[in-house]
Image (cartoon, rainbow, N blue to C red; front, side, top):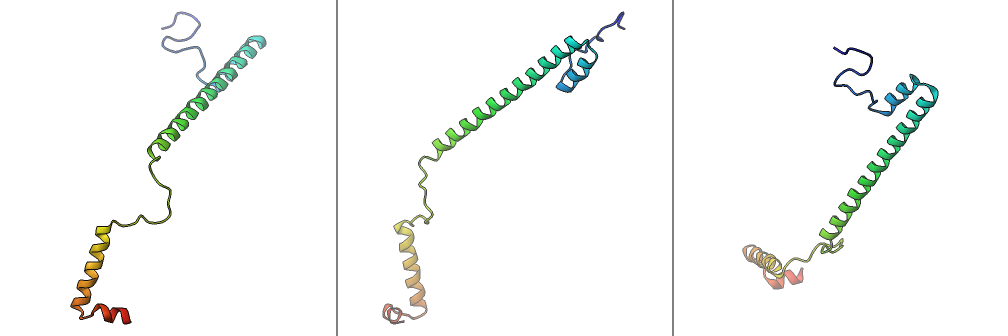
Length: 111
């Protein structure tokens, strides 16, 4: 049990956010309340600057890593050319189908 005025044990007398500082400044004398508000605004602004700087660093690092990983990728809207083996397999399959259906190369060329 606290024996006198002041913060209770385990709790800080400092406000944890800007709104708490505004509420606490309202309970203080004018000059002291103004000093608390200025300090709270500066702390808030510094926190925003730190968040902006760290987010910028992460974004730039991510862009650098992405550029490094993608430097070997060729920009192309055309499909990649199939290897010669795949083309040869397609031609062979077409010839087998034509033989099964009784067509010849001359019949295909004429139609």
